[in-house]
Length: 70
Picture 1 (cartoon, rainbow, N blue to C red):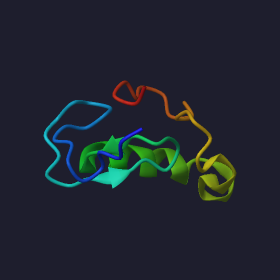
Picture 2 (cartoon, one colour; picture 1 turned 180 degrees about the vertical axis):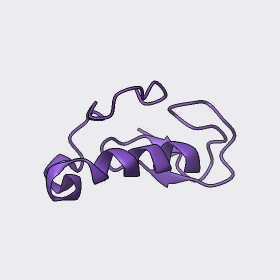
Picture 3 (cartoon, helix red, strand yellow; picture 1 turned 120 degrees about the vertical axis):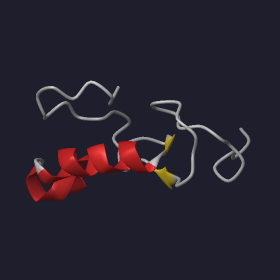
């Protein structure tokens, strides 16, 4: 599988243009700054800052009303 982190142009989650890119805390997705901020909000609400969920393969649904995180 080819690593496209530096070459892809859109967010794996919301499909917006990647001006800022980072790797998801929970999955192998390359995400934009907005999706990164949403993940940080989720991590804040998880025990121990979400450390037990790092790389778990899914984004925990702990905040009501979050619809952009899949």
